Image (cartoon, helix red, strand yellow):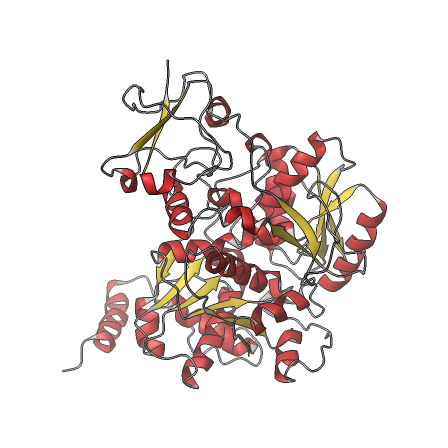
Amino acid sequence: MAYSCSLFHSSLASKSNFPLLHHRNHPKFNRPAPIVISCSSSSTFDPSSTTSSSNNNTPSPQKNRRLADENIRDEARRHRSTAKNTLSAKYVPFNAGPDCTESYSLDEIVYRSRSGGLLDVQHDMEALKKFDGAYWRELFDSRVGKTTWPYGSGVWSKKEWVLPEIDPDDIVSAFEGNSNLFWAERFGKQFLGMNDLWVKHCGISHTGSFKDLGMTVLVSQVNRLRKLKRPVVGVGCASTGDTSAALSAYCAAAGIPSIVFLPANKISIAQLVQPIANGAFVLSIDTDFDGCMKLIREVTAELPIYLANSLNSLRLEGQKTAAIEILQQFDWEVPDWVIVPGGNLGNIYAFYKGFKMCQELGLVDRIPRLVCAQAANANPLYLYYKSEWNEFKAVKANTTFASAIQIGDPVSIDRAVYALKNSNGIVEEATEEELMDAMAQADSTGMFICPHTGVALTALMKLRKSGVIGAGDRTVVVSTAHGLKFTQSKVDYHSKEIPDMACQFANPPMQVKADFGSVMDVLMKYLGDKAPKH
């Protein structure tokens, strides 16, 4: 008979009705005088459940091995607690006042409030506050690096703060998240005079972009809705590339049809091929992203297709976990600045929401200042910020190498403004030449980033030059996609084939004759130029 046993420090166990830790011999719990709480082989502790029983006559803890004929989902099901979940979440109008009574179950198919405004996922903060910050920090830390379903995911390791009521059987996950926080040592020192610059590589993910973080949540909820017999035939999105890749991959994993509206000839081949390869029904439409977005909203209002764009606030619940992850990776120390590229603008609010929840629930005592970085060719938020928030005007987005943020009428404009105002935030922009130069400079120091990260790095350079960001400020730049999705733009840059662009950091290959003397000549010159100067 297999047993599942967990050790809790008495200060944690003293709280009644606490969500229980799911871990395997985590070193933080090897403390003296523990309270031993056991359960039988037929169940284990669900992190969002409660218990009221304990038994000190328990066999010694033994390694929790999966049975030979079961997978990790089966194992999680066998060890699941039957105790009642005490945590919940619901849709409410975004930024609604305390007197607002409008709300919706997450099991309803709804994207807008009655007034036509945005919705937000609101968690039962009073229930979450029954557990102190130390508890939540230890719970989240205890799950890092595990393969326990579904907590091996960087998103679902924070399940209580994401979708607390979803059954783990309904979750669709590729164990996304847990992405590298890269110390940009050489780039910081060489180009900015900074020693504490970090790049959060969210593009090191299942489909190569941070969109996976939100899509695992949305597709998991759709999976639940379909099991509840809600009228959902498939899931659809408008996309500039990465959203469609994430949607198609997660839908394919769950066996759910996906429909993708793409602006014709406006995304990279690498981005186009992903939804095609994953079996999505792809419509290439002769318009831009804003035109695709208008069409998908009209279509989803008429057909049983679930809308997957960031108008849908479920996506933001997954994306906010990247902010919590950053705090974890700094051992719960708060950075001074976090810089995020912005297009449709859901991501800047998601980062704010993640940081703010950690502050409200006592995991940290403050939040970082946020910077939203836009391409100058698609900069409605920047123009709004420069007007001191007096008047917002959508713009016609012009072509930019940062194609995923080529959006002139962002859905989440109100969310972004709220996040920036409440974090003492800043908006900056990058021209095409600035963002491409920044990308080349970053790549020359060992990174391989996307153009959107080039936009964020340009914002950092400008704020560093103006003295807004100090040399000693701990700063995190969020990299949203993998550089391999944008190889053509890098080829064009290093070939100096971009019209009206100097490409000053280009590094084209040198053509050399196939003989020893010619090769030696060019190598001697190269090594001579690189030799240390004394």
